Image (cartoon, rainbow, N blue to C red; front, side, top):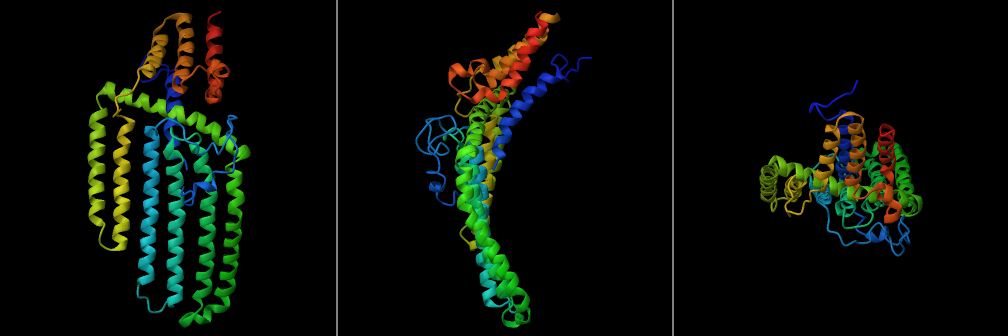
Length: 373
């Protein structure tokens, strides 16, 4: 029995296929940093991309296209994470200046340092998202930049672990000196673990930004970049067709602007208040930027995606076996539209972007050939 969607005339399997492809695109934005304040830690590790292009690190080489709408949203999300790290740093300063009588001053200072180290971990993570996935459309391998930054995050974690060991060791001092026989050896052990983690960072960074891993991330970026762009075009076309694009974009802009204003009002006072205000403002900017997913603010959206879906519906409306054959061909055409090229011509076009979706295209071609007999 043929299963139909709630729309009646569109098979559920076709809607699932299109939704899955679109979901892959939109989900990429949530993928996971500061490149530790140094993109050079990623750059210089690779002489070329997985596509065979030489010269420099393909993960961060600029391309001519501007940042895509999905990239803008991911970039703002990364900025939000980075701002959160800044607020944690402000908390560390508050801890260090607090008056806690029973806790030795050295222990209190060590605790503040651990909190500040945690800020470094969070900011490094957020910067990597901004520099990588937040630059979709502007760098050749945005996924590779974010993945390679994991090594820098690990280095920060190692430093945090080392300082945690120092904190534990120094806890057994002053009024708490009876704890020293336990805290000092445990703290020393924790410190050594942190040293080991930090020492592993350069090797991990190199492994994640070159060789097989870089090839995998480059292939992923080759799919993510055009797919997210075309998925965004599709959602913008739907927003335009339903008339929801400008109202939703405007609503998100007002909500985001309100959050930004609240955040601005929190800054300028205490250090902790300023940190929290920056987080709220970044959250507002992230909310405001999300409207671009539904509203084409530049007015550059094309009609090719809608045409592809229209062809699919046209095939579905066809009767008999010829109509079924048309469905197979139309679904295949829709796959082509979503990735931007015909998967059967990927070799001629010199691109690897559609190869991941070739099995889907082969399946639809097989169905078309079978029902056409």
